[in-house]
Structure formats: C-alpha cells, structure tokens
Image (cartoon, rainbow, N blue to C red; front, top):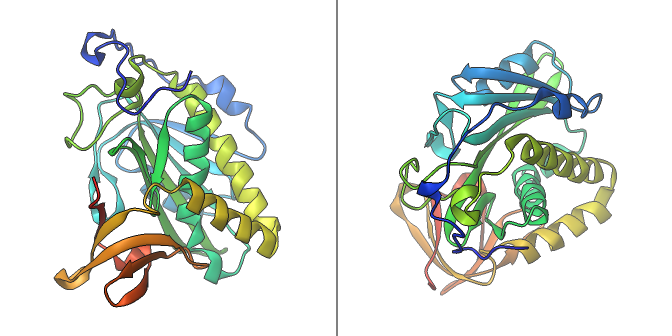
Length: 279
C-alpha cells in the first residue's frame, strides 16, 4: 500500500524504535559489482570514500556508517542524526562518459533512489536537483563530489536518508523520515540493498546507453521532478533572485525557469536555494 505524504498510521513518538545494526550478509551478496564496507562511527562517509578512492579503490566501493559525526550536504550544510537512525553511505564511481555529462550524476542519483523508495511504498518526489521529499519535507539529501585520483577522476556519491528519526530527532522542522511518514520503523538493511541496486542499474544504463540513454534519463527525470511545473524562487550567489515557472530540465541537467525576461537555465553549482512559491 502506498502511503500519502502526510499519513501517520501510528504517532511515531509511540513506536518502540529498536534501531538495530545493519546486517552484513545481504550487503555482501551485492558483490562483486558492489563491495560494502560498514563503519560504526566516522566523521563523513564522503571523506572516507575519497581517501579510499585516492588510495586506488575501484569503482563500486560503498562506505556505510551507522553514525556520522560530521556529515556534509551541498554548500557544506551539516547533516546530523542519531546512531542507526539513517541510511548513510558513499559510493565510489569512475565514470567513463565524457566529463560534460558528469553534471547528470546528481540528478541520476536522486531519480534512481526516488524510484527505489517509491517501489518500497513511500510517496517520494525529487526536488531539483536531487533532494528527496515526502510532501514538501526533506527525507534524504545527496552530495556528489568529483575528485582527482592517481587513476583519474572519480565521483563520490554521498547519500543520507532519514529512516527512523522521530519529530524530536529532526535537525530542522522542514525534514521528515520514513518512520514519520509510515508510522513504522523500516528495515535499514533492506532499504540500503534496494537503493544500491536501483542506483547501480541506472548508472550502468547511463554508462553504456549513449545518447539514447541520456535522452531517456532526461525525460524520466523531468517527469518525476516535483520542481518542474511549479512557480519557484531561485536564490543565486551574491544575493540576486530569479523567479518564474520551472518549465523543464535542459540537456545539461540545468533547471529551466521562465521568468519576466524569458527562459534562464541554472545549474546546481550556480544556485544557493530553490523554493517553490505556489503552495
């Protein structure tokens, strides 16, 4: 049964949150394509994955943390959660597509993870470029970083998904969790397996599918992006603001906004924040 964005079957504060550790066995079954390293506590999975990649780790290494003490989001925003309450991981990728196509990696990640969560019954949408929302509340964040290594450039895909956080656990009032949305504590191991499988499948198709795969990804992403079709306010560096209707996503993954002066395309690295104004 798919749950609506504001449905609480049981008040989440009344749930007995056990927050068990991840089960290594189902994660080991993802090999050889994905090799999962589970850490108890670390500062940042992206930092650890970066170190591993620079030391020669191959594509497909996944660094998972039960607790992250210095997690980062885009623009160095912090990401905090109690131990074993979230799915937190970073994936090392070494794309062979042209560098000009790399800006699609954050969008591909959000699209693939949103698809996996919807298959699990959660009414998740993707806010451009890759925040995952239930209703208008953020349930997951994604940070993609390009790094240089002795073996060439690599991409580090960092993901933080709120799983069993209660309202009192949320670091910001605009957040939510899968438990808050469903009234039940999900199985974090099963969720992690589903997310990784969906991401791997989408990435593999994008890698080998050429222009046809890129065009399909653009169409599918735009169809599932909750930003497209809404009136938005785009805060830009330096304090300037762009307002208008988000009409689509261009071939480079940039959000197209139709404003008073015509259409403007903005990339994820060019904006501070995008907010819907038609609520």
